[in-house]
Image 1 (cartoon, rainbow, N blue to C red):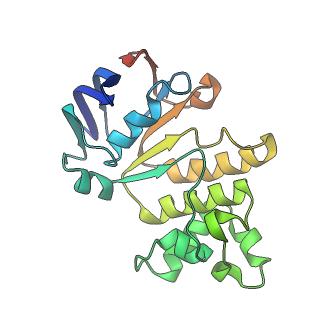
Image 2: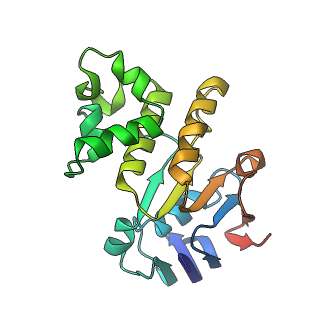
Length: 212
């Protein structure tokens, strides 16, 4: 089992957001979770990614329950990519020594290579404060390249294409397909059509998770 959630409950300032969530995801399986904005989907992903610690219940990813160990096994792509004021290369590697070839392969898989080849400074191009010198689609693909380069066994997608226009969305979706190959995937969205390729789709409503 790649992901196991048992009796998970989580609150913000005394207000319950998730109630008694139970979920299991087999290795290599892709599941979708649909729900309205503000319904707890992002909170659930942050618990699955080790960014939040469960208040009640169990979250286990790749056999690990410690948030630090969970984070090593998870790559996450969110709706609005977070970029650092650094080069494209450094935004992909995040300071880790992962080798030039690995970064180049990640760029190819994320459909960044053609754009990067046209930049005077190439992969060393500065993206600006909060990625202000690149477009939303380019920023999203840099975030996907970062996830590909990490090569974690579990991939979490949080409305990964919902902020993009139709043309850009198609390119990013192709990059996401490369990211998800051979991985365990949890994909959350408020649009059912974005979850069409999932093996199972759950509904998160009122803090409760309903099965397919």
